[in-house]
Image 1 (tube, one colour):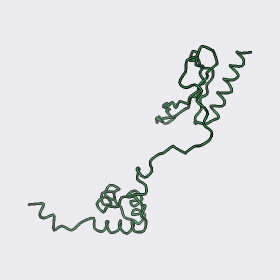
Image 2: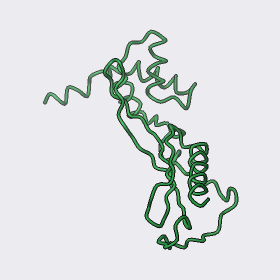
Image 3: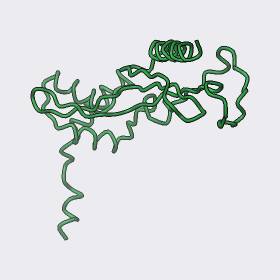
Image 4: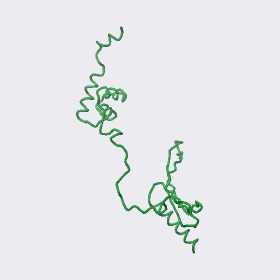
Length: 166
């Protein structure tokens, strides 16, 4: 029978609901974090979970910043000139330095700073390989995936091949 008494009880969140509704009328794109910050700046101490629960009850879902509306898409259309496919998946060769390939690989490593905190760092490895025996002719390791690393490795590969041929 205790649950029947709850129907007559006054909603303790009524004032907070009115205040949140007022804030949302002003700022349509505010989520629970920003609404909570606005309430705190107005002097109302409230837990963010409580604000989140009330906003869910009132149906104040922010639609402009949901993950589905910001789906990642890397396709940028036809940018630049597409090189002809001369290898056609024939990676094996019997002539040295006839087919040289490259690829960029992202490697992650852990770094421990002076305070003992562990952070994940990334480096990008750009090797140039001879397809005769998968020998690495040159490589570069950079902190960003840029053309500068690839071009420096390419220059080293050209120097290596030209010194062997001459």
